[in-house]
Image (tube, rainbow, N blue to C red):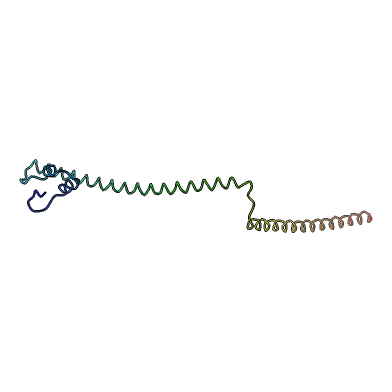
Length: 151
């Protein structure tokens, strides 16, 4: 469908023939062989509309691809959420009957032994302070007795 007579087709002609439009429609959209003021302006507007349609089709393709990517991400997030909810329900159901494993037991034993060691150190310090207080108290009593005898 070459209306220019030089073997080339316009983008409009290509798009019309690409969508399977009848040749009569494509020929009616083809620019007339003779240029005219009104026909030339209409041809330019028609070409401008065709470019706008191509741009919209490209944008639709971009948005469709972006939508597919987002739909994939949404599916992945939904799967992760479902897995997390299942794990949470499982952990909740196991909680009352759950017993610490060997690593947790070992850690708890270590913490308990550290606490006992700290208590023993505090007990020794308290005993030393008590003994020192007792010695001071005895010394003070001896001093008081000596003072009272000296009078």
